Length: 226
Length: 222
Image 1 (cartoon, rainbow over the protein chains, first blue to last red):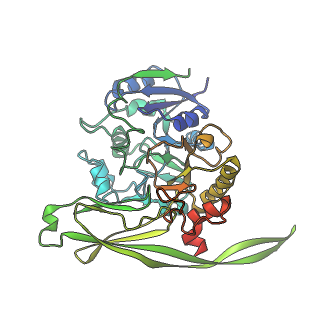
Image 2: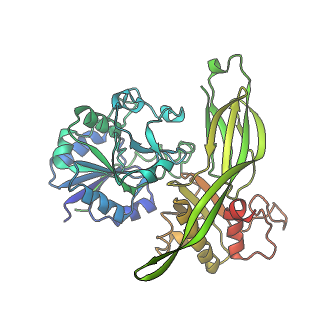
Image 3: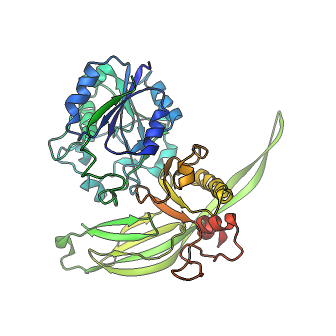
């Protein structure tokens, strides 16, 4: 059995995603059909009652290649929190790599933040795609976005999975906000682990072949490879 | 403040999907879109580097210049969308959106680190291989990720070094940045090639010509 586990937040049936995840050298646990809020006790119970060394988390609209995942695993040997990165949406030039200074002033870390801010071009403190090539391979980021974010068990237990009050959820924002506020650990983005984010917000709400809200939460299950 | 979306998933569509009534008070009731195509000239030179193992040669970029040419200019009412061009092949667009005679928003099509989808309708497997080779080259040039909609590619792992995401040919999702169709497309009920897909027509075109017309007409051919 591997000492690394990937926790997958899954609400779609994507063959490409399943194939890419199956190639990764780690154990997997699929939380299928749960809303982000519903997962809080389930994910935290799993972390508390399991004994893996490394815990990664990702939703099922992110595709990573095996060699990129290996780079994240190896970066976790000398970093507390590591993450891949990608574009916020395909129709957006901003990436998830967010400059960590003055984070509390940033809109995304305000509790009333909604994705509407992205539409209004206010997400202007992250690196844009054309700026990435000039960055070093490891970059401190204020936000991970659950882009294959990994850490040791003791960090997960200090920062358990939490969401904003409904109707918002943003468990990824909540995690990064608390880590930044405490300033005990750094969130390190590995540049060579660029992840494909299969999401275009222009058509996400109408694209039922990709994400059908009426059916995706109807069958809940937890599937493990271990 | 108004919000505009620029959608490249099937040609080009610009939508004022949200407008601010109070912001629009006393201002114009329409916006204007100027669509350009960017052309970049790169001067390259063959350089030799004498070293202990002999002479190695590399091609180095000496200088590059870019410019843009106006394609269309369109006025559109606030709250409405506009399709400035029906072109479905790859155009290196630069879009300027003006509101109340001021430049309000700009966008340049840039595939770097984005997902580009190809819907492939080849006549046979040999043509599919040809197209996949060209797509592999396009992927390297633009540093983009590739999704492919094609039943054959979807059913094999043979092209997994090129296709990062795979779908069946008729999958309708649009979860990508740029969408391109490669095939032979005709005007409805005629044998006339659809010039929105085939800028250089189809006469005497082989498989390579067809995909080159789609990908490189605006960047290399003209």
